[in-house]
Image (cartoon, rainbow, N blue to C red):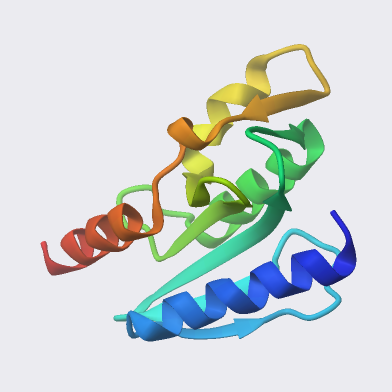
Length: 138
């Protein structure tokens, strides 16, 4: 993914999140695990953002490992999640899909260096937002 397309996707995600009431910022030039940080109703949301023109995307195991490590470092008590970590992918043909890192954890047990994510395996933006709103209100 080119830097320009990635940065554009990050800005688009921030715009979508702000429309839903999130307080979001881009970690510009991070080249690390975090691209966008958001706060919403007392909880932190961290997004690693990807863009692809294809119908699937290959993700490296070490990228997921960094996200999983980040999740557990900021959630020492598994019963009370204070920070949610997502891989956010903008598929050109399918729109945004969100993959909770805790669900990607299972993929790390394989033997391959990369694995494939498809749009059907992720949550669309509206489904993610409705789910987050429900989690916070309960």
